[in-house]
Figure 1 (tube, helix red, strand yellow):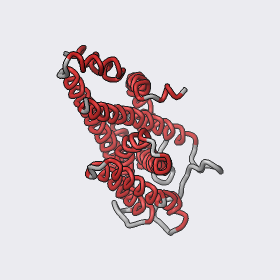
Figure 2 (spheres, chains in turn purple, red; figure 1 turned 90 degrees about the horizontal axis):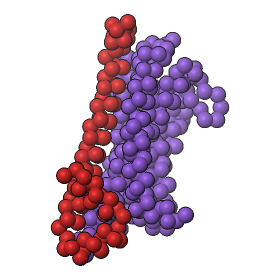
Figure 3 (cartoon, one colour; figure 1 turned 90 degrees about the vertical axis):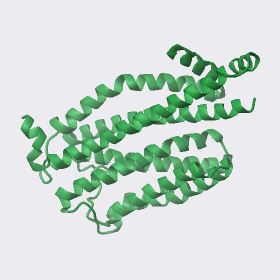
Figure 4 (tube, rainbow over the protein chains, first blue to last red; figure 1 turned 180 degrees about the vertical axis):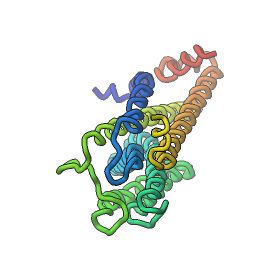
Length: 235
Length: 77
């Protein structure tokens, strides 16, 4: 069982997974785009501009989920010092930053037709910008701190402190009076979104998840090779 | 129909720019990640090739990853 988690076995599985995702990705992307841009209906209030939701919402979910994952991995790593967890967290961080930035930019574009402005220092938007700053701090720590153990400790601390911001992002629309609308999709409770819009949204989310998995696997593979390269120099 | 799809009742500029920005950035990020991976694979394979025959044998016997990368690299050249 533990043999399965050995780097060489993981490496072989990574290659297989990358090939599999590459083979199905573009078909799924085309289907998701067709639903998002053509087949889904316009909103009765926002009209056609609601289609921005199909990229904005999944991007925001991934941005939040990635940082939560990094924070939990950092907590475990802080206690047990498992090197693989650092590699996983390091590989997730750029993906999280990318999608957080996409959520901010597409949200800003959506703001113009909906609120009449591209930007407002609203609680939700500000807390998302803070999330992007935490991602940057985490990535720069690994990039610019040469001593690996120090970089791991500092980045873990950043991730744990940044975790406080996650519920602030999530509940900002309920705690403060904001321009941003409250959540339409609830895990517990009834969602206020119609299935004709929910289906394309979930489909696009699935495509984004596949993309994240692809990038994550490539980044993780790069990290494994980087370590192997370092070990080779010791011979 | 095509006109409706492009203009989207006047919201086309917002909707299309959101989608174009998202997928262009994702495309660039994918390309850069893949390029970095390939660069590392190539450098690693070259370093193995530069080892002495004895060292190379030890590395390839002990590391499945090294032998896999080297065989993939040899296929491409």
